[in-house]
Structures are given as structure tokens and as C-alpha cells.
Image 1 (cartoon, rainbow over the protein chains, first blue to last red):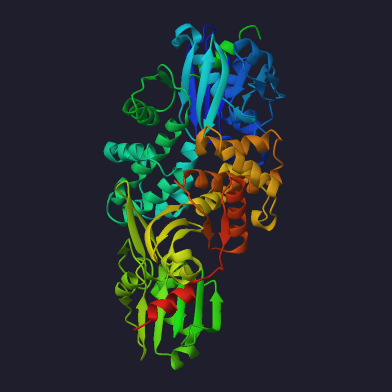
Image 2: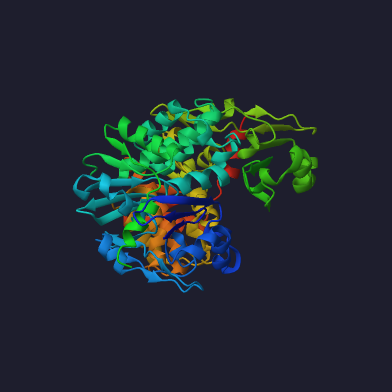
Length: 293
Length: 293
């Protein structure tokens, strides 16, 4: 089968054997935002054309199933595990002899406010075997980081934090970026400034006040300007951690190396246990969902 | 004399009589960011040329005295009142028979982190006569809103929140703006959505989580997309208020009508007393500083 994890800014496809073994991988920066005029069909053929001739089943997850994607696949409500997510797959109309399905994304409510995810639910299905009795707290750091409660193999609730995107827009478009170097913050770990940002997040004043402090610390020379991006990153991640209610037990982390390292550092410094998991569980999750199709 | 309040995005000048009466006003959008190649001298002559022929004293406040301005006027430390700020005026070298002075801006420290203001200290000097025995809490909402503690006519400490700028960058550059209408949120008060955002700020989850909720509320149809800007504004102002420690007594507000109205509404809804003051106190403050020069 073909498994496709098609997000906002990246495209990843896997050709899988019957047992889920990854036979081949394609990765490109052709996320849905880069696809003009809804030409998803054409982009898919360009990326994995030869596989389409050979395979007859394809599952896709991520923002490709959103309103801005190929076709909107309605969200399934929580709690949801493998059977509920499979039952909510949406058939994708695609000129191809095989069958193509979109994963649904999940929604939940907390304090009367909805939350949504798209793609992460499939990553978590693919990581279930690493959770003790299919139960635990999973954090997927990123543009919109997710904190997901999993019980007996089902996602019972989750919380999204706009941490990564806030970092990016503040750095690129606010006055905070003006004091910062042009190079990407992530290229230099700068653990000390990151830890200082984390510590600041635990003090009073609130995030909006702490953000202005990034400027004044740079302006007054308290933090070297080249360390300000790491400080800002620590500040935001620190506020995210401070707000995640009732973290009991270890936190399983799924994400790229840099983010997993930073969140691991932040959790450890606040006395919690971080368990990094193998990244990129989408292929395993989509293979699980394909059973019986 | 000539009083000039020259900020990041606006220029305001006043010609004042000996008793401080405003004889004439010039207002333009030629803030320091719009001035190319440090041509502050030329811009000033274009805006208030005829006054320069007649007057022999000029005081300037705001970002014109910052590193990005005409000349950097070092910050004065808190506590600071009229005498301390006057003593910290910086002489501006300007080809003119009169004397020109830059107000210094103020700095303070809290929890080891510096904070800075430039221009607001002059507004507060100009508003002192409205404070009971020169004592009170003053809030100046804006791009970087300031909460200022004034005791016996001196500014003893303050806190800056990046509320207005966060609203602007999130609306213009983040995923939150994509669901919002193009028109400016401020054109429609939309009190109900604003109050809903304020209420959300008082719940658990933290600002970064609440921000993502702006998207999911719009996506799931809980809040009409045209109301999302007002909701976001309420959310940010609500978080600012929740973080301002120990608000005792009334809050004096100095700002434009829209912001003063919103902050007044937010304070009232959280059971506090808001006292809007006359806006634009810079001329009065600069006149006060000119005594004895």
C-alpha cells in the first residue's frame, strides 16, 4: 500500500509491504500550501507515479484532508482509537484503479471550546505499541504542539498550543526579531539562554509581559542578541509547559530531533520525565488503519 | 516653545504658549520608522518649519530618542519624577538658534529583568494633576501597553505587555488571520465576542493554547469568523489583565478612544474601576519639563 503524510509545509510518502515494512520513502517540501489551484492530483502523480501503477490501496493523513486541502474529511470526535478513526475514513475521488482514503482528524472539547488535530492522531496510532497498555501522555511539539491523553489505545482528549507558530511570527514579524541575528535559532542550541527563558516563564508577569522582556534584555545588554532566539524559544516552551495541566507520569515525545531535545530539556528541568519516541510514526499508523480495507 | 511627541509610527508637534496653552498642533504619520537615512532634521523642518523661526526652545519625547531615532538619549532609572527626568534630558545637536532637548525614557527592573519606556513617562508627567496626591496606577494601552505605578508624583515602577503588537502580528501573519475578515477589527466593537475572549482568558490552559482556540472556534463555527478579531483582542487583553499583579484601587487609562473603551470594559467586567483620562498628555508633560531650561 501507499501511505501519505501530507501536511501544511511538507509531503512524505511511504511504500509499505503487507506487514507494514517501509519499502521506499519520498519526502519533499510540497506541502499543501505550496500546491497551486488545487492541483493535488498532479503533485501526487509527480511524487509517487510509479507506485500508483503497482499498488491498489492508498491512505492519506494530515492537512490534505482539511478545508484547504484536497477534500475535507470531517473530524471524528474523541474518544477515538483505531476502530473509530477507521470508521471515519473519507473516500477520496481520484482517477486511479485503486482505492484512496483520507484520515478524518479528531476534535474534542474542553471548557466548551473545541480543539482539533489532523495527522497527529495517525502518528499516535503508529506509536501505540510503545505505550504501556496503550496508555500515556504524548506530546508532539511543532508549529501547533499537541498534548494528547491516550487511554487503552484510544485518544480521550488533547490540547493544542500555538507555540512554534508564535515563535516564528514573533521572530519574523515583531519588534523582537529586530534585535536578533538573521540565522536560524535552531542552528545553535544555546542551552543557557534556553534555560533562562524557561526559568523566566515560571515567574509572575504573564507571557505578554515576558515577551517584551526579550526586547529589553537585549536592549540593556543582559542577554547577548545572538542568544535572544533561544531565550524566546525557552520562554514560549516554558509557558506551554506551565499551562499543561496535571502532567502525571512520563511524557512521550514524538517530533524532530531539535524539538524533541528542547522539550526533553524543558521537561527534565521542571522535574518531569521525558521519553523520546521514534519520530515519524505516520506510516505505521496508516498501515494499522488499512487493516480490513 | 515647541513640544514634539515623535513615536515609531506617528509625529505630533505642539506650539505652546508660556503657560502651556496649545496654540497650534501638527500631526502626521511620519513616525521614525518612515524616516529614511536618518533625515530627522529635514522632516522636522518640513513639519514645523515656521515655528522654528519664531521659537527658541524645543523638547522632544518618544522613540526619536531611541537607538533607531535621531540620537540615543540614555534611559533614566526609576523612581523618577519631574526633577529626575529633567536632569536626564539630552541636548540635541540641531542647526537652529534655539535649544533642543530629548527626553530620556525610563528603565526599571523586576525579578532581575529590565523594562523600558520612551515617551509614556512624559505623558504621565502631563497627567499628574489628575492623580490624587500624585499617586495611582496608570495604564497606557497600545502596541506595547504600560502599567505604571506612580507615587507622590514619581514613577516607581512599571510593566510592559506586548499586547497590541501580538494582536497585529498574529492577525496579519499567523494562521489565525486566515479565517478573519480583511477589514480592521476595531471598526466594529463587537462587545459580545470581546467579552467571550476576556472570559476565556480567565480559564486554565494558558495563552498559547487559548490562541489556537481562536482557530478551532472559527473552524467549528462556534464564533462567526467576522467576530474572531474582537475575540482575539479580548483574549489578549484578558491575559494582560490577569497577569498584572496586585491591582489595587482605580486604574487611570491614557490612550485613544477605542483602546480606552476596550480596556475600560475589560477592567469593569473583572470588577475593577477604570478612570479614562484625557488622551495625549505629551504636550503638558513636555511643558512641565521645560521649566527652568
